[in-house]
Amino acid sequence: MYNFCSKFQQILDICKCHSENLVNSLGNVPRRGAVPLFSDLEVIALSMTAEAFGIDSESYLFRMLSQRGDGIPNLISRRQYNDRRKSTAGLCEEIRKRIAGDIDGGERCFIVDSKPIEVCKPTRSRRCTMGRGDTKRAPSYGYCASQGKYYYGYKLHGLIGTSGVFHSYDITAANVHDINYLDDIMLEYHDCGIIGDKGYIGAEVQLDLFETASIRLGTPPRSNQKGARPFPFVFRKVRKRIETDFSQLCDQFLLIRNYAKNVDGLFARIIGKISTFTVLQYINKINNKPIGRVKYALF
Image (tube, rainbow, N blue to C red; front, side, top):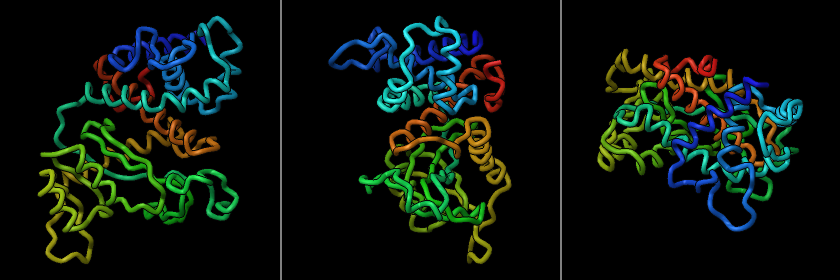
């Protein structure tokens, strides 16, 4: 318990250092109403600490915290924590972007890929209530080529640097093609190179990226593609970096196992997991350790 509280304070200090102009002196986003004693930054830090320790159950988390009431002062209830974690997801993402910029803000080469986020098995999709009433954010059916199976849920699109830090990501329905995420990248990035897999092949897309934002997109050719150039070995090696990141998110942070009952809860959990991943990379960097060894960052 002491170790959890000490790491909570360590992550809270990092959040405070990267939240300038985002929160007030009490660590809260300025708003009307009563001032909470347990600040917004503390909610974010508690969420990150739980993810870092592999605790993905709120029931277990608060049962553990209740064993020692003086561990974290002014601790809110489980229901309040659940509600405020959703409302502070945007603040958490802004802090994560600042931390990612401090790790490798000057990179000009990125890797793009996607990861399926299964909500339930396709046979149970008719009984799934997630996204019901909000068709724009509802899950859908998709196909994962690497696993060779259909699933019902969402798709996580990620853009990372060559060091393995997430610079941008988005969550879409499972039936959205990977290549559509490049439209969002084109609005935020320019004068850089991006490496993708075969799902991003498209001569028109590559030309549009280059002419609009001076982005050079490199992909491995298909076996029957005519006039294609060989994919450099160094690109194949670098592209595995994002696959390693997704594997770490699934292994340590249980990305594909969640207990969310609605879309906001699912998105907040995913934001918290990726933000925790970035914070642990930052801790490794300031301690002069390989940033990819996030499992040992707090120990």
